[in-house]
Every structure is written in structure tokens, then in C-alpha cells.
Length: 451
Image: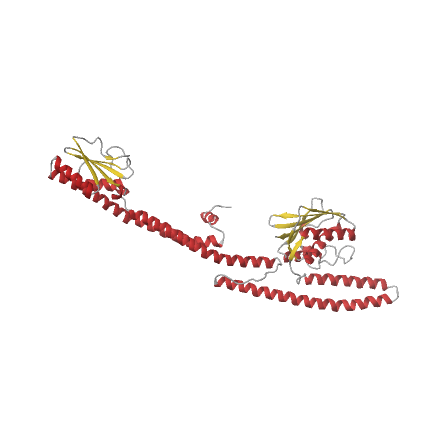
């Protein structure tokens, strides 16, 4: 498979409705937050930090100007006291001192930060150069809560310690907290509302799946958004129509069965009382007619009126295998990995298993039946050592009234409805019947029933 960007994006996108709905809501929110953050840090935050740095540089420049205007140790002490009390600056003078290096701690000596980086150091360096105009050294790493600034004066080095609060805007933290907090709040609210909507869709999907498996869907009520309610109401109406049609068909077939059996019974009684050489052949023909009618009615009826109920599939298999052993006399082995239970229509499944296993016993001498769990389903596998079915004809045998052996001899087969009825029952339970080669050389029949 060729890799494309579209295929990669599709592979990482959520597959569920809840995930995709939240992505539709959250993705624009994330983009909005990123744009807001970019605008904030690109304009507001940079402007505020520049002004804070300019204010600090202006205070330091004012202290230096007052020291020049009012020289002397006594005046200097007053100036430093005023700076500490009113400007929140801790100032001292190292008389005769000389700066060993200028610039910023952590950078190579005499290196000036890039002014386009909008960092604290670059803003402070630019402000000091504008307001003070003297060699300076900035240390923002030694102290946790203060910034150290050294300025080279004519009579020594002026040491200034200023609180970091004077250089950092508290609106940055508030902005980030509000941005993250509101995003989480909106995401939580969206998740709650979307889960309620998705829950309605999941209930509808579960109801459709149960109905497709032939299980009763009781007390189903439309919920969720208007569109989901509309789909649920349409499903409820469809379910009622199908049940009504099945009920009407079953009642009609029951009448047809009675009407057909009555003349056949009279014919059987008449033949029993009659005498002649052809009586035996006529009795055999009537028996064939009765058997064919039973097969046709079983196929048309499809056990549609039967309700699904919890059943022990292992017990059903044991009953079917025991019955076929008595009737056919074949060697039929039954292997069950564990106790298997699931909602089923017991009469329909019993007919399906009888047709599958009986069909194998008709053409083979040894039949092996295995049943067990396979993922989210139960599989019943029937292997025989018979002649098998050609691969290109395996789907044909599921067609109604079709037999690979063309005669209607009851000794070589029925009326061509056994596998058709079996697949019809399996699909009514949401499963299927498939054919393959058996390890013993004959035919393998797999009945798969989803849990």
C-alpha cells in the first residue's frame, strides 16, 4: 500500500464518533488558543516587559543622577535609603572598583543579547543603554528572587539588586491559567454533552445488532438529538413491520400446512384400504409428497415466530448428535471445549445443526463435530470423510431446491433445502455457514454465531 500524507492523517484520526466529535470541537479551540498566545506574547507581553525594563533602568539612572548632583557620603546614604524605601532597590557603591566584564552572566564576555529575541536580558540591556549609557553587567542567575545589576561609574562600581517582580508581568501567569482553565472547562462540558449524544447512537446500534441476530429488543425508546431520534423511530417502525410480516406469513403457512396435509391424509387412508399391484408405489409417492411439503414449509417458515432465549448450545449439540447416532448409525464424535451458552432460538438452531450434521452423516462414515469460542463468536465445525463438494460448487448448494445429485431419491438426499435452511437460520442469528476442505479429506462445514 502506497504511503501518502492523507493516508497517514487518516490513520491517526480517531475512529469513533465521540473522538471525532471532540476533535471537531477541540481542534479549533487549540488553534484559537495558539493564536491568542502568539498575539499575547508577541505584542502585549513584549510591550509590558519593555516598559518594566525601561522603568527599572530609569530608576537606576535617577539614582546615578542624584549621586552626581548631590555628592558626598552623607547624601549618598540618604539617596540609597530613599531608593530602598520608595524604589525597592538595594543599592551599594564599591568605591574604586572596576567591572571585570560587561554584558550578561551566562553569555560570553561583552556579548550583547539579540534585541529581536525579546528576552528579559535583551530588553534590560537596551533600556540601560538608553537611560544610563554606562558599561553594565547583568546577573539573572545567581539569585532566585532578585536580579543583580552592576554599573561602572567614575568613582567605582554601583551594585543594584532589584526584585524580579519589577521585570516580570503577573498577567502572563494569569493569562496562561485562564487559557488552560477555560480550555479544560470547555473540553469537559463538550465531552459530557457529546457522550450523551453518542450514547444514544450506541444504543441504536446495539438494538439494530440484537434485532439482526434474532434477539428481542424490548423497551427501546428513541433518545438523543433530533436526527438520532428520527433514525431510532424509523428502526422501531421497521421492527414492527417485520414482526407483523413474519407473524402474517407464519399464520398463512400454518393454514397452508393444514390444507395440504388434510388431502394427503385422506389419500393415505384410501391407499391403505385399496388393493392392487401399484398401491405400494402410490404409497411411496404420497410419502415423498408429504416429506417434500414438510421441507418446503420448514424453509418458508424459517422458525420466524420463535423467540430468542438463553440456551445451552452444548446440550443442544449433545441431543442432536445422540439422535443422529440412533437414526443413522454413523460414527459421530462430539468435542466441546467448554460449556457454551448464548441467546438462541432453540428449535431453529436444533434444525440447523440437524441439517448440517445429518448431511455430513448421509455422505460419510465418520463425522467429527467441534464447538468452541473463536474471538467474539462461537464456532461449530463439522468435519467428515465423505466425497466433499467441489470448490466451485460450494455456494451453489445453498440455493433453494438445488441438489448436486440430480435425483429426488430419499436414499441419496432430501429435497435440496437442508443447507439452505441451515444458512437461513444462521444468518437470522447474525452468523453464517461456510464450506471448506476437511483435514480428513471430506467437507468441513463451519457454523459461526456471534455472541
